[in-house]
Image 1 (cartoon, helix red, strand yellow):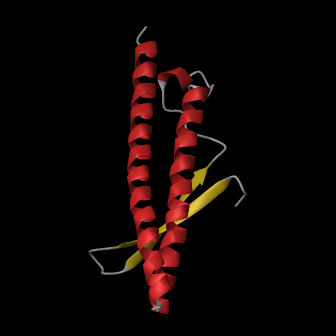
Image 2: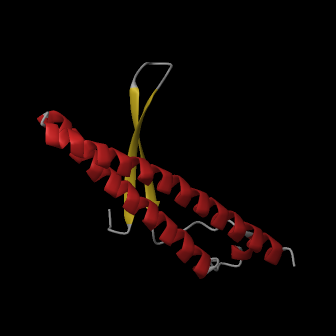
Length: 129
């Protein structure tokens, strides 16, 4: 497999036999299948680069906050396992930061939803003209 594609594996249980099946999903970053009438002439419509950049920026912001949350959770767990009073006190502020970050992720996803909806509506208006 080349570096431009990724695979995700999921496991599903077959209800008829009780056996598990493994299923790989491949995703290529180089090619997106043609899905619109504008693409039927052989050219791939990449859409609005500014809209894609905005969505990409939003997803990067979300991922950054989620990465920070992962580190905070690890630290909270380590502090909890140490059972030291000072570490338990530190957990209060770490958990408060986690809570704030969760609210931030909700807000970022809300913004992404709004941006995506606006892009779709803009494209719909332009394609109907």
